[in-house]
Length: 221
Image (cartoon, rainbow, N blue to C red; front, side, top):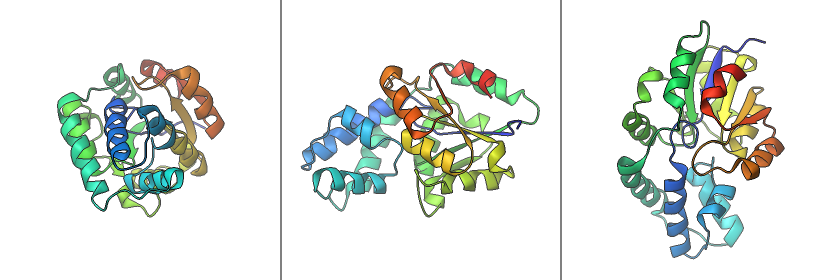
């Protein structure tokens, strides 16, 4: 079935932010009694909302983060991203190519907040490709790995789920895309990813295929 919609995750797919965010998360949760390395955060937390991360941390370490945890992480991360975040290599050219394809729309669906995505997409100049079609998990009842966010994005775009392709770097995101009845492509080309490790995890989560060079995406859809 022809693809009519490409849904991009944001962190680790459009913007190379996960190394920054994982280091902040690692430092914070370790300081508050739940020792996790950046690699631990990458394996267990990437793709989840901050609220879901808090639950996952409690499950792993039997430690509750402070009441200020969500605001603390958001503020620390925003400060770092404002200075450091860059676009994923090749993503500008890829979006230019997709924009030229007749009958193909693009949007963003991310666990990140609208403010965070406005910051990262704005700093990298990627916001101009999406015409405001940027959807956050704060708009749905359940975040990834539930399908709610992807189904919401497809409804907002007026396109049937089976005609959508989702680009995700996390197993949780892949699981959500497949649960929504969409094709899921696993991306393992951001700075925090090693395809030899991430690839099998994405495939195990249900990815239809895995790729590591963003400029190859147009040929894959």
